[in-house]
Image 1 (cartoon, rainbow, N blue to C red):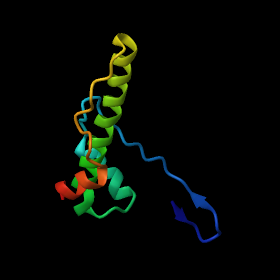
Image 2: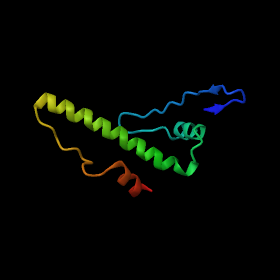
Image 3: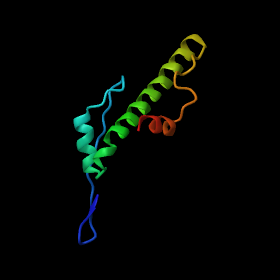
Length: 91
Protein backbone atom coordinates (compact mmCIF):
# COMPACT_ATOMS: atom_id res chain seq x y z
CA UNK A 1 0.00 0.00 0.00
CA UNK A 2 1.22 3.46 -0.79
CA UNK A 3 0.16 6.50 1.11
CA UNK A 4 -1.29 9.42 -0.86
CA UNK A 5 -0.42 13.00 0.10
CA UNK A 6 -3.90 13.58 1.57
CA UNK A 7 -3.59 10.65 3.98
CA UNK A 8 -5.79 8.30 1.93
CA UNK A 9 -4.50 4.76 1.46
CA UNK A 10 -4.60 2.73 -1.71
CA UNK A 11 -4.85 -1.04 -1.37
CA UNK A 12 -4.06 -3.57 -4.04
CA UNK A 13 -4.94 -7.25 -3.93
CA UNK A 14 -1.92 -9.48 -4.57
CA UNK A 15 -2.87 -13.14 -4.99
CA UNK A 16 -0.39 -15.98 -4.57
CA UNK A 17 -1.42 -19.23 -6.26
CA UNK A 18 0.14 -22.65 -5.75
CA UNK A 19 -0.76 -26.04 -7.17
CA UNK A 20 -1.71 -29.09 -5.13
CA UNK A 21 1.65 -30.76 -5.79
CA UNK A 22 3.67 -27.71 -4.83
CA UNK A 23 3.90 -26.15 -8.27
CA UNK A 24 4.30 -22.38 -8.37
CA UNK A 25 4.23 -20.14 -11.43
CA UNK A 26 7.57 -18.36 -11.00
CA UNK A 27 6.67 -15.51 -13.37
CA UNK A 28 3.50 -14.64 -11.45
CA UNK A 29 5.28 -15.07 -8.11
CA UNK A 30 8.12 -12.76 -9.17
CA UNK A 31 5.63 -10.15 -10.39
CA UNK A 32 3.72 -10.26 -7.08
CA UNK A 33 6.89 -10.07 -5.00
CA UNK A 34 8.07 -7.10 -7.07
CA UNK A 35 4.71 -5.42 -6.37
CA UNK A 36 5.40 -5.95 -2.66
CA UNK A 37 8.90 -4.47 -3.16
CA UNK A 38 10.70 -7.67 -2.16
CA UNK A 39 14.31 -7.88 -3.30
CA UNK A 40 14.68 -10.06 -6.42
CA UNK A 41 17.39 -12.19 -4.84
CA UNK A 42 14.85 -13.42 -2.26
CA UNK A 43 12.38 -14.77 -4.84
CA UNK A 44 13.81 -18.29 -5.01
CA UNK A 45 13.97 -18.65 -1.22
CA UNK A 46 10.40 -17.40 -0.85
CA UNK A 47 9.22 -19.75 -3.62
CA UNK A 48 10.82 -22.73 -1.89
CA UNK A 49 9.23 -21.70 1.42
CA UNK A 50 5.82 -21.41 -0.25
CA UNK A 51 6.20 -24.87 -1.79
CA UNK A 52 7.21 -26.26 1.62
CA UNK A 53 4.12 -24.76 3.29
CA UNK A 54 1.78 -26.02 0.56
CA UNK A 55 3.18 -29.55 0.74
CA UNK A 56 3.06 -29.48 4.55
CA UNK A 57 -0.61 -28.46 4.47
CA UNK A 58 -1.36 -31.16 1.90
CA UNK A 59 0.41 -33.72 4.11
CA UNK A 60 -1.80 -32.74 7.07
CA UNK A 61 -4.93 -33.16 4.97
CA UNK A 62 -3.85 -36.57 3.70
CA UNK A 63 -2.84 -37.75 7.18
CA UNK A 64 -6.20 -36.65 8.54
CA UNK A 65 -8.01 -38.43 5.72
CA UNK A 66 -6.13 -41.69 6.32
CA UNK A 67 -6.61 -41.41 10.09
CA UNK A 68 -10.37 -41.02 9.69
CA UNK A 69 -10.57 -43.75 7.10
CA UNK A 70 -8.33 -46.35 8.68
CA UNK A 71 -7.86 -45.19 12.24
CA UNK A 72 -4.11 -44.92 11.77
CA UNK A 73 -1.90 -41.90 11.11
CA UNK A 74 1.24 -42.32 8.99
CA UNK A 75 4.32 -40.33 10.04
CA UNK A 76 4.91 -37.13 8.05
CA UNK A 77 8.01 -37.33 5.84
CA UNK A 78 9.39 -33.96 6.92
CA UNK A 79 9.10 -34.64 10.65
CA UNK A 80 11.77 -32.96 12.75
CA UNK A 81 12.67 -30.09 10.39
CA UNK A 82 11.30 -26.60 10.81
CA UNK A 83 10.65 -24.12 8.03
CA UNK A 84 13.54 -21.96 9.28
CA UNK A 85 15.92 -24.95 9.12
CA UNK A 86 14.73 -25.77 5.61
CA UNK A 87 15.19 -22.20 4.38
CA UNK A 88 18.68 -22.14 5.91
CA UNK A 89 19.58 -25.32 4.03
CA UNK A 90 18.11 -24.01 0.77
CA UNK A 91 19.88 -20.65 0.82
